Length: 133
Image (cartoon, rainbow, N blue to C red; front, side, top):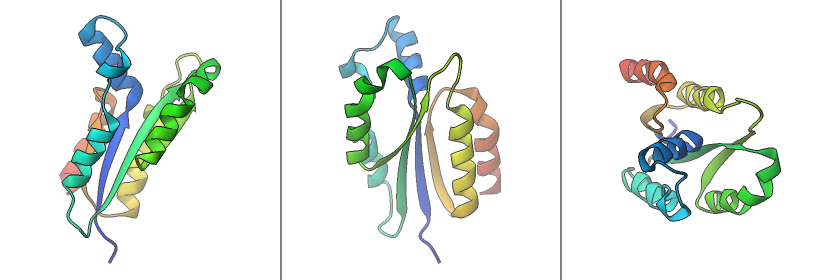
């Protein structure tokens, strides 16, 4: 039997927006979520036999792709999977984020799912996962 999966999913645009709302301005780099500390905390919760997967979902403005490239590489070096989608008009990553969680729940036995997001659109799927165990 495959190892149980612990899944960490970060909705980066939503977290950034919520932080900006709290601060009343765009957050400075040193005020943003420390992905390395989050990953270390999450991995530290796992049993030795568990598989741990961390995922960042981001929107990238096409004219700013070069600016986020080093951050994406840093995430990848920290062993996060990065799902990037071009930010065009009002596009968002919500559907892709939920589809990934759903896909992983059908592929593996999820023993823990933590979603870093304030988006209420995640509530239905996460409630369903919690109800089914």
